[in-house]
Amino acid sequence: MTGLIVVFAVLAVATFFGLWRKRVDGRVRTVANSRRSESAPAGGVPASTFLTPRHLGEELGTRATLVQFSSAFCQPCRAARVILASVADETDGVAHVEIDAESHLELVRELGIMRTPTTLILDGSGRIAARASGVPRKHQVLAAINSAADGVDAPVA
Image 1: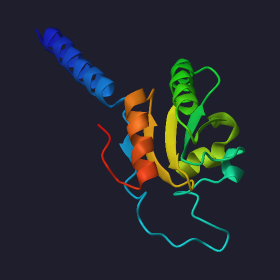
Image 2: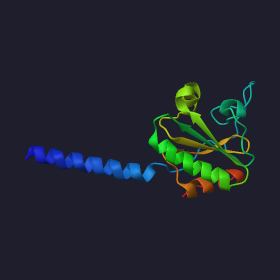
Image 3: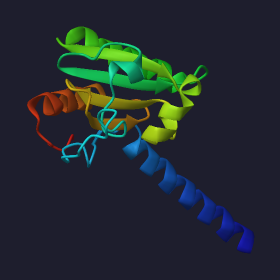
């Protein structure tokens, strides 16, 4: 009887975890400190809040930049790449930059990237406005771009 209780408990926990993970995976969240006024150190803007072409190796989009952290054998990264490239192609002033997480470990650590794919949505100045872990949903990426471009901290549905 104890074995049966353990089996049901494990199934319940696994089910709860699976449902929770499905709900939060890929959800675009507004970055809490993205609107905070922060003084820049002598070398420029704080890298934890802003990213520059020097960090990315490519120019920023005039309206927004979608920065995708990926790894070589990551299947969800391919799906994220398709979605983000599609958004960048369909939206004026939006650039998509893919960064190999393994080759940029210092930046990954500095930004708190814990898994791939992780997407950062930057406004036109390079400020991190939103982020998503997992494959982001296209409509949420578009809403985050609009919020970042308008300078509004609207929650993304």
